[in-house]
Length: 85
Image 1 (cartoon, helix red, strand yellow):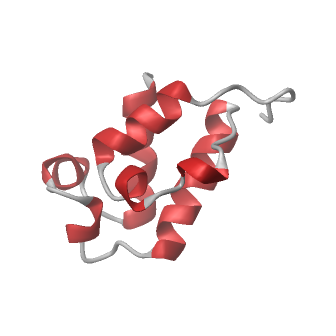
Image 2: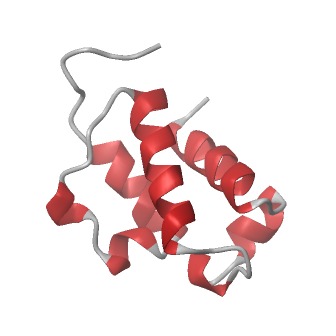
């Protein structure tokens, strides 16, 4: 499964939306189930699943409110020393 597929799958699960609805949304914030708590859950799950650590400076609205930006964030994230899982 690609990073994009993992991001879509995880975000859809956490936000309790259909993957097609997630992908077709202009911004994640347009989804009724989006909240700051849920985006934190998405980030934490993906960091664990992918064995990466997102730098706090990269946790900006521009990176967290749009699916493509979120995918890019995880594509560029450096791996952690100890991968969990």
